[in-house]
Image (tube, rainbow, N blue to C red; front, side, top):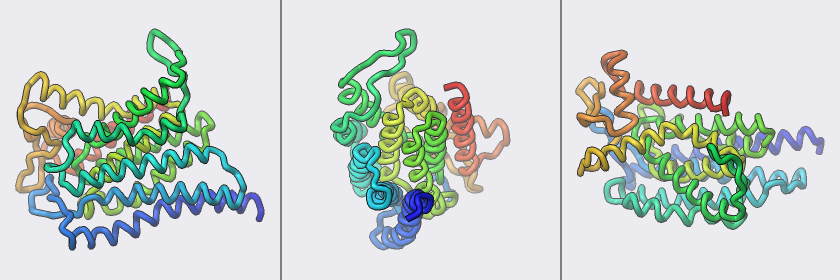
Length: 341
C-alpha cells in the first residue's frame, strides 16, 4: 500500500472511531438512562428537568477505542511500534479512572464517594504510568533551577499529578457544556504545545480526545440532553495529566489549570477561613426568568465569581453566559501560556 495512503488511513480512522463511538453510544444511552432512572436534575434551570447522568463514560470509551485503532493500524499497516507501551498505559489509566467515576455516578452525587475516598482511590489509577516509568525525571523549579529526581519522579510526582488533575477537573463543573468545553480547550493547548516541541504523538493523542469531546458536546451543550458526571471528569483529568507528564510540559499544564487552582482556593477559603459547615455547591440561585445569581453571600466557587463579574457588566446573567465567560477566560490563559511558556 502506498505510504501516503497508509499514513492517511492510520490518522483518519482513529479520529473517526473516537468521534462516532461516543456520538452513537450517547444517543442510545440517553434513552437507556431515562428508562433505568439514571438521571439528575438540571440545577441551573427555572423548571424541573431530569437529564441522563454518566454520559461521559462514552467519551472515555471513544478515546480508548481511538487509541487502540491507532496502535492496531500502526502495527498492521506500517509495522511501527513507537510509544506503544505509553499508549497502552494511558488506556489502562483512563479505564480505571472511568470505573471510579462511574461508581460515583451510580451511587449518586450526594450519596456517592466522599471527597477523601475519591482522592485515596485515585492514587492506584496512576499505576499504569508508574510501572512504565512515564515522563522525564528532570524538572525545572523556581529559584532552584533544573533538578533530576530519578525514580522518585515516577513513583511520587506522577501519582500526585494524576490525583490532582483527576480531582481538580471535577471541581469546576455543574453547568451545561462547561466540563467538555474546558476539556476541549485544555487538550487544544496540549496539542499546540506538543506541535511546537515536535512531540507529534502527544499532539495526536490530544486530537483524539478533542474529537471525542466534540461528539459529547453535541448532546451536552445548553440545554443539555446528557450530563458528563464523574464518568467524564475523573478519566479526563487523568488523561490530561498523562499527556502533560509524557509530553514533559508540566509547567504549561499547571498554568492552564489556573481556573481550577482558583476554584480550590475559593473552596478552602469557605472551609478554613469562613468555616462554613454546609456543602459548598457550584450551582447558582435560579430566578423565574432563568437568570442566575450567586447562591451565597460570599464567593465560594469560580462559577459564582463569574456570575458576580457578569452581573456588573450586563445585569442579568444566564447559564450560557457563565459557561462562555469561563471558557473565554481559559482561552486567554491558553494563549498566554503558548506565548510565554
